[in-house]
Amino acid sequence: MKPKRTSQQWLLAFNLSLIGFAGMMFLRGSQVPAISLLATALGFLTWQAALYLRDRRNDDAFEIIPNIQRPHYYQIFFQGSVYLYWSIYWDEVRVWAPLILAQIAFSYALEALLSWSRRRNWRLGFGPWPIVGSINLFFWFKEDYFFLQLLLIAGTQVSKEFITWQRDGRRVHIFNPSAIVLAITGLGIMLTGRIDTAVGADLINSFNIAPNFFEVLLFVGLTVQFFFSTTLVTFGAALSLSIIFFSLKSVGLAPQTPFDTSVLIGLTLLVTDPQTSPKNRIGKFLFGLCYGAGIFASYAILRYVQQPSFFDKIMPVVVVNLLVKQFDGVGNWIFGRMSGMQGMIHVLGNRFLHMGAYAVLFVIVLPSLKVRDPEFVDPFPDQLLRPSPPVQESLAIAIAVDKKYPDVRKPFGFVAEIAHFNYRVELNQDIARSHLSIAIVLHDVLGENDLAMKRLERAAELDPQYTPALNQAKASMSR
Figure 1 (cartoon, rainbow, N blue to C red):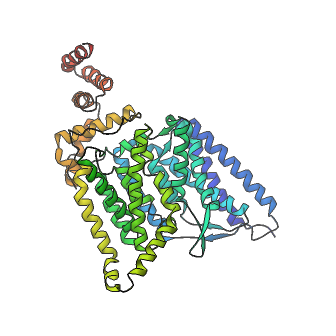
Figure 2: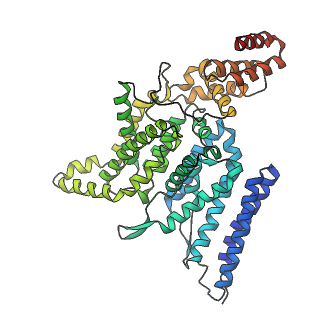
Figure 3: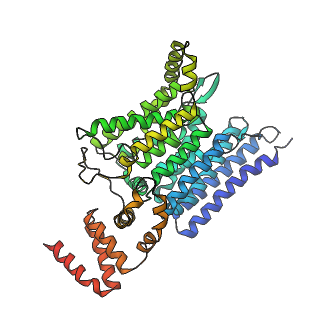
């Protein structure tokens, strides 16, 4: 009997889509991604043919079992909302989007091949979407190293398949698949000194361009918490970071804010994976508290050894994942000691109470997240990595909007953001006064004198009335 053709056709479709994405990259002039995707597709097709020849007499060798899980397709919506808002302010997200889709197709094909190679059914669902989505919220390899991005995705499949343990009577993966591969990658590029292969500083700083990213993540987080029991993890981590920040602020040892946007994404969409977090409520809260403390410890250590701090929210996930059974054990022990307080347990276990507590905490710390102290002195050594010139200029545009319309950066400033969006668009245009406004911010706020000079030169080229300002700037820099 021949293998089922429909199962083979599903896999063939994903492999052909990789060839399609390769063609798209060739047309765009992105040679390394194109070659990487084409070589991968050919390798997968060869692998598929080998499996066909091995099992051509076994009708059940290529079985597909539908595996539609609610957390997976909800995550597509949650992550998609974050990507949509991010893409409005940073063009690179839209440029990178086809390569995210290519990574998803790659993940599906590899998942099928691994399952059938191990003579198991392919559980087809939306599982690859949240894994690929979360990785690309935190880390990109530059296009010249895109083949390493595919290895990242391959690592998630390998970790799910082979790094497992017995938990609650089921065989499940130990680590959050996204976090473990990102942690290993981070260690690898730091130890080898190849930070230049990654889009790291740009990614983290690009979140600061959008004026209300914290609030968007609050609403996304509350929606996640409404449908799933993740509140105590996120709340515990946010509480831990806030306590550490305000405790250290009085002695001048705190960072500029309790946490940044990328850390909040980690609290909301990364560490909350139900497969790798505790099951009981107390365990979840302790898990979150330790994760928050781990983020601060990772940030401080990475800054002091002058390594990129954007791995601070990744490294602790691996540690708390390893301790998840202990967190559940402590939670069960505490519940056992409180067996005579069922009424209090019922009240304190209300998820809407947890959501309310998280929202209140968030509103309290929000001004500290958005309003930067002009007299802040960083207690940590300087970061060696700086954003690229395009991101610096995008940050300058954001600061120029803020200076003219300061209400844009106030907590929940969505109305002002919409009202003044046209000014942001104008600053992105090739207009002399726009170049002058951006040059002032680049020089006075960001200290990017070379970029400021280029903007002034362009302003003078478009409108001679700005030539005196250019000459004055050149004279000032020559002194």
